[in-house]
Length: 562
Image (cartoon, rainbow, N blue to C red; front, side, top):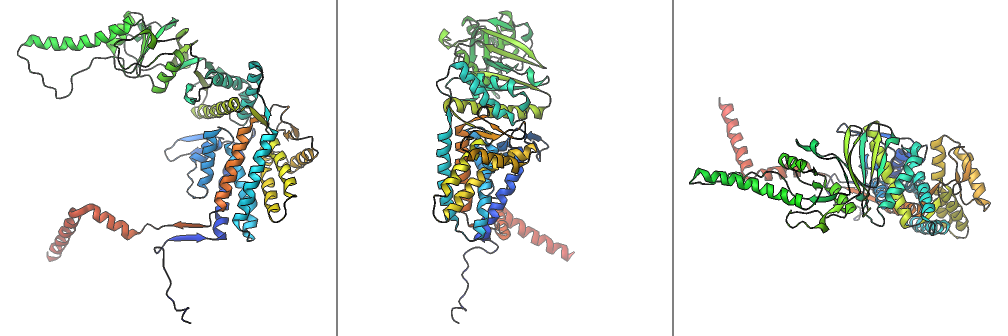
């Protein structure tokens, strides 16, 4: 009786929202499944696009998993983990963002019945980690190396990887056109890891096939003054001077006061200003440069001065464009025009200004360093060009990964089916409950080929049965879904490839995310106390606030008296 009358111990503030136990784990799994259902239909070559309309009135059309996950304003704390793994997949390998979200959600979906039946989450986590490790080892074992081939062969193989990535994008219809362009761009920057050395410039208008690759740098014509049209627009083997200074008349500082005893002295001050700018321009001309680019403004006086001496100039050039010109031409950006020596000047074979659609572009080609490339994208609508840029970014990332880690695996769900078969066989050798959990992991991997079939409108059950039979025979390790016929085909022979690192990263990230979500059994949400907010507001007002309150009190009494 005494124990029943013991007072309740209150640890958390009143109104704190706590949910825990089995129900909380199931709730988290349901939230993650709901998020995955949003991007489920975007997988593969027949995936649908999503139109996302934001509160600022902008709209984005995309079927890139990472872009959609970023634009969805997800507030559920567990579901946000899926957004994080999609972002990490995008930054690490560039593609497979939808795959990683689907896999994580499917692992959780397969775990849900066991959680509801009272299985401890850590039993599942242990088995999932083991299965994930085995799956990654199997992917490495099945990977095919493309190392040791000639440059032409390697280019062709890399183009196949790029084409596989592009096939699931909005520009999939033009993958044969864009894949070689992406490969050339990646090979142009060599071993450099900086992705910003590949520029993508968007010009509305024309068709997608009007897009072109510049083996060098191209950027939009900057703001120009009178005299610009008198400058030459084409040079052969010019020297290029890169600056980070203003080339225009500097007025004196505000509130500057100069006292003169003789009116003639005023003229000397004006002359000094002009002499400074002319001295700078003179040094630029004497350096022998035929092209002068600056990150800051080049004024009307300088523009006309250069035009009279057959020199091309452009001011307010974007920082990244200037850095790419420096990397390509071998020049160095100068912060002063004093002592400009030949070593700091860049050079290229051809410079010209070309009209592209409604825009004019400054194009530097045949650069000695050759460590940059620019893709000029054309297309109808702005949203279309934006999505094309995102698609090319994914393809560029994939080709870079394939260059560095030169192993590929068959796509089209082939690798997933083979790893699934391997794990099912391995599960039979395990005694105890773990057998069920590893089996569930293996079943979850089949979500990729199943979703590819569903998105293409094929009978998923029929195609998966054919795939299971082919893989079980021991001869069909490379067989995946054939999107063209609705049957199955050898993905490796049909050049449906993806770098092994994409699949390894996806399985690793999805397994970690699933284990993390399964390990959370309680969520605590602290309330924002209204009284606390009121107190904070009052204290922020300080003495003035108290005085104001007192004044209001007196005013009120006065009103009543009247």
